Length: 238
Image (cartoon, rainbow, N blue to C red):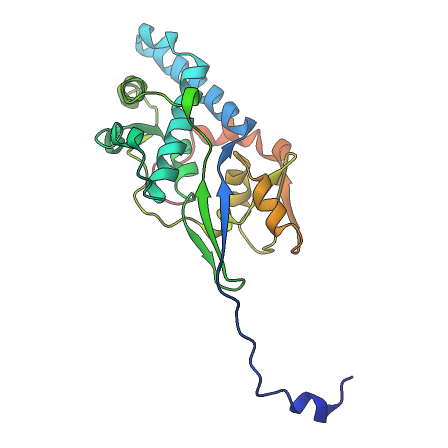
């Protein structure tokens, strides 16, 4: 027990927060995004078969996965207001893209987020580019498939989220070696599920020395994809 006089001498000294630290969170798609693309394609083919949309059966997994990566790319650069020439080609189309609802839920929490307790600002980034991107014309073609199947039960949302604000509970998660961790002990586990779709090694290197809370593993979350695909509501936050 410290001496009371010693303690009282320091009562008027207030701790000051350090200036905000900026942490760049890399949105690198994990294998979970491939699983989501596979489940989406299976649903497209199922609906196309019974609705007589035979031409849509030619859609390939690579096309769906690239479409999802393109949407993540657009979301990140929209948040950061990046001035890339390639973005100009998409600007007139982005508001009209039909986005499968579960993929849309992945886009919502991507953004700038602040942890005021630790004075940390999280900013999204991505290395997606090149051959991983679909052209605006290719995106429009896949969007048209999703749109036409909406009348037959495929759940979609139009456009990407507009707010630059992300979800701290999501942005503070790290996903390394199929394990989802955070330094925050009371966040909702749904954000760990969403974080499992991206690899965030760099974030783990920065926050790894802080208290580590295990939120789950890829194997815990993988079976939720098929379960959620047709039950989740359109739009909204997780």
